[in-house]
Length: 196
Image 1 (cartoon, rainbow, N blue to C red):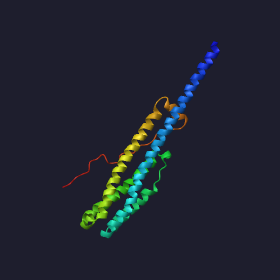
Image 2 (cartoon, rainbow, N blue to C red):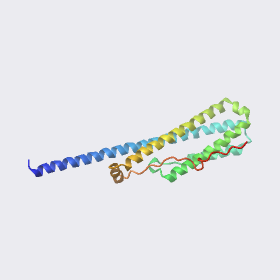
Image 3 (cartoon, one colour):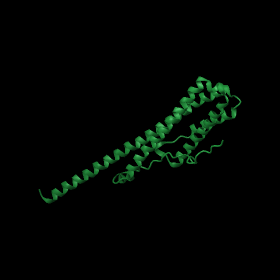
Image 4 (tube, rainbow, N blue to C red):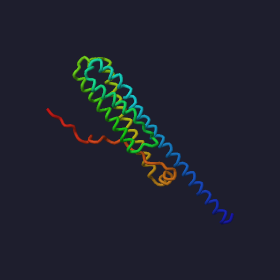
């Protein structure tokens, strides 16, 4: 074999290594991105579960506290707003996530007010349906928190992967973009004021 043939063989091997390496990196990024999208679906699923519990909770409270109609209407309106915010995981921008979080935060706040008024109704607190719904709601809130944490972990893994060399080259060629994170709501870093 002459030097030219050996050079072509070496060049061919190097090109094959680069091509197969690029394909491997691309496939890894696709899998990671789908993992982020799947985790987003889990987050939405838990928010939907909470949303599905609300009509039953409102109906149960309404039977005992019908004159608290403003609070009940606020919960229903907040639920309606929260379910209208749809986010495509492929186009999850910080602004869309903030809009989603704001709608869910309003719903959480309205639910908090609803649960506070129940303190004035001992018969309602003793109602088995209400207690079951309250336990389910608390469990769902825990699941939401867990799924949000898992989403952030999946986003972090993906974001780290697309920034590493040589993955960043493949990521920029195929337009893999950074994923956003759930962040604490504004003002949540301040301790609540307790007055006696």
